[in-house]
Length: 235
Image 1 (spheres, one colour):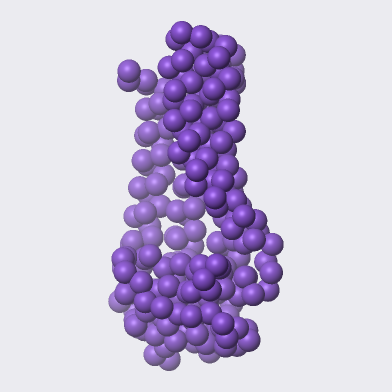
Image 2 (cartoon, rainbow, N blue to C red):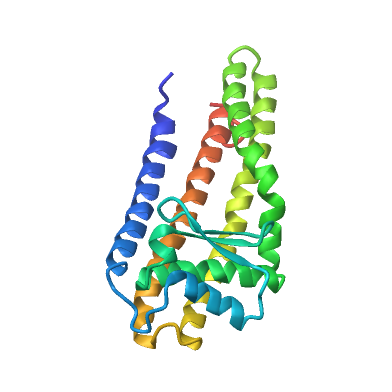
């Protein structure tokens, strides 16, 4: 059945927030991917320079498929850079590449929130899907057995909340990696101070996607808690 509350509380806000964040990332990246850095470092070279300066020699930088699929894997110690970043000398590419190098530096220096996020990954991965289906099934079950259905929704909410915790822990991890990148690209001579404006805009836009994801997850959780009567009393 169509539920207007889901449309108003979850679907429309989620689409608006996520769409806006995605648009800002693409707009910033596309704009500054056309602006070349004066020192001519590629994304891969810039990331390697930050790793070398930090004394990190066990991280492998590899090319990756896909648009903005860049990531650092603490388990394999691989820093993967997408095609538009790996060989590009643009300001946008340098921002993304050095941000990922920031994650590798976090790992090497024992940055606690990165460790917390890695520990939560398995729980969040399974909890998000199992929790959602449990909450949905619990609402259906409430039509036959309100008390049992509410318990199922509550159990599902606990599982689903693991994803929200993961996303909340992700925020300081991502913002810290960006802060490191913004400072180190200038300190290491990869870009000149006046070129940092573009890097700031690219990384600030990217950070909004993590905020948007956390808000969407929170609204979904709130919807099921309200609709089940766990919050706000019985519907």
